[in-house]
Picture 1 (cartoon, each protein chain N blue to C red):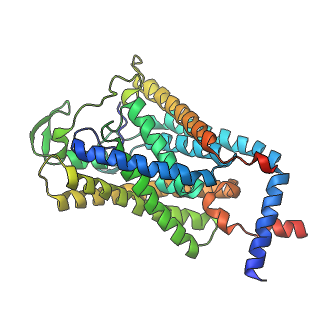
Picture 2 (picture 1 turned 45 degrees about the vertical axis):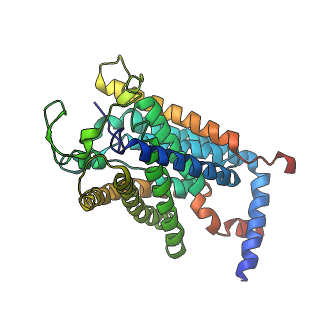
Picture 3 (picture 1 turned 180 degrees about the vertical axis):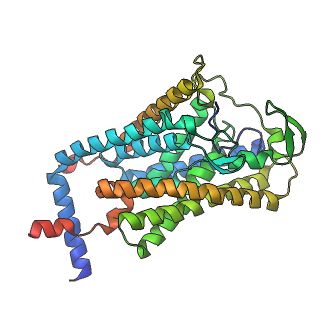
Length: 231
Length: 139
């Protein structure tokens, strides 16, 4: 049985463009490590390890979106909500590197492309939406779930268009780009809905069980502690 | 109530509370981590066997335009997957989410999933622990 993942294989995008994206991904990941240090304390570090392991597990669960077409969660939005954007991008990258090196999933030559789409673009889009939506939506498990759902759908479509951009730069066939873009967007809206349901369930559950472990809620932490202490 | 005042008060209270109950919180984090890992292990070890084996969104798009034989080899047409090359790590003992040498596919997929979750957690938690911010000097 082959569990497939939505990772670019070797040879789909040409060597030079793949190499440029390896350099790009390494540079952005270095910035992520630098920025992530401010967030990573004794509690967030193991939590981030768990988020990476959880994303690995859920990426094995391909669900059917159309006859003959499946998809799986990418995890950027989920990671952003639970551990923040910088650590989140590193979590998804960790998963992609483990998958590439040990599970032969996603070409080694294409690792820069895959990291750029799923760990960087997907996470960045997820972060922008989460940051925006949490200004309007209630900071409750339900509100957080709705945020995760909407942000996931957009994030997955953005990640899929990252591939289209890379293919425009270094594609190895003469297929029509608008067609590739449209087909990718269409299937990835459906995959994003699946991802959204999984991400929403996950973050709403964590918000219910351990709201203190939800990075996205930290800024909005309610003055519960204050009231308890005062009483 | 003054918003900014309550915010800063709350912040400082949170900080002091975090410090004083730090031990208890760490212990509780341990239970959360254990529970989370258990869920991940079940998903990768058991539920993974019920995953769809259809080509995914990217793969399906890459295959569109070509015709395939029963082995999945391209027989004609024009599509992105035509130029696809083999994977450098195809000889890895965990390649394609199975454990080489185990022929029961459910067992092979499940064990590969369990190995993947444990490896990803170890590398992730270990790496993040190494680069974390340390504040011992303040204590």
